[in-house]
Image 1 (tube, rainbow over the protein chains, first blue to last red):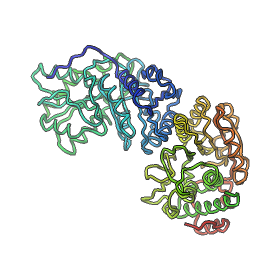
Image 2: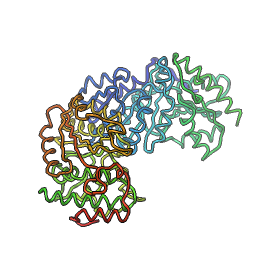
Image 3: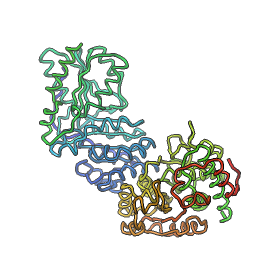
Image 4: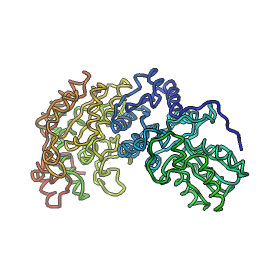
Length: 317
Length: 285
């Protein structure tokens, strides 16, 4: 098992803020919008240097999406930011008509996705956003795994012409990816090569998958770990190449098991190569208040559950 | 263009509208007929449009030109007719309205790359927000163009409209002129009965808008005068709202003033009766 060490923990939303800071300096067309959550989205450095390119929308997310769509008419690259719940479910029709159907170059950037925002509870813990966004034709869906990858993804999507949903979160987690990585939309990252089971993980679950890989290794199981940061378009080739070798899959995501990464992977497998698949995901329920670690444990999303799922998948081979 | 000329265009646009909705036996003639003077006045007289050798040229980004957004997308027939008559796409294409494989979808869309359309609309309440974004982009680009947006009065019942109404004065979007088509009708009946908007002018004024009225929204001279007045108020830190009083179905006597023609197409006899009231001035498509 490849060793992943870290010297620092940070939240992925800070990676987004750092990416925006860079974009503010590099790309004069980038405009940031926010619905009264500037501090939570870590936008202060961007706003400080580019006050004229920041648009405070107040607590009016629907209007923010429309204003973003309009800004693209004139060549701007709007980054519309708020919590994942308010960035997707609350404004689904606005995104559908004014952004996706109209093919506008809007970047919807959503923090506090999943369970791990913690104590705020289920009203804020959206677990359906990946599903909603990936169903929109033409929408790119990205869920990076740590601070560095989120920063790289933020910078990369400015150069891509088309609507993007970028999902990140609140908890501090280890920084284990390369600070100078080149982020390629739609290209899976091989975290660890293995032969017994493919663990395909996205977002915060990648670190859990690495920990699970270490536990499995101690038990003599050699796990291949793949980071799917881009859920749409999905790197089908990387997935199929991996399952050819391992013959079974665990998907891991901080999302409802319905409609997320697991279902996207299952579609690829059903169409191309039938192998056992186990889901590590929230079992069609809402979340609740608690610490991130408590919630990951209770809802079956931590390393221990990935280990169990891997063993089940292997047993079904 | 002289008023008489504009009125001739309007008459032809009205013929196009009723023929289009008759041709596919669906669509929304009422609001389309009511907004004919506004769209003709904008496109044929008031808006600065990009042209090459006297012919309009469509550019999605609309740099240095005036932009128009239709928020109440169901009155697409009037917009399609005006765009075609202005030269954005062939007039013959109007015959494809709402038919399979057409660029003239039931509600406007950019998806089929129809020249003149910059955003999809149909699901109500979104156009003002989009127009505010486009107006903001113009300011960021030091572009002196004006952004126009038309909404329906029934559409004022959507919450997003009021998010946008709050945003515009706060950000001093003073390069934008919005219109509400006050025809007093919506699908289920008179607006005052379905959901009373009460005094929209007072509401927008309270939100910080500059509000003016065009009492005779189907009188070309009155519309031109109102547009001139609205334009004169731009650039003073406040967005402009024009309350455009129109008659739903205006120009076809049996369609006038009733919500019943909001989304109903005329049959063959009704089409003939309608066309008998509208001069063919530019040649039917």
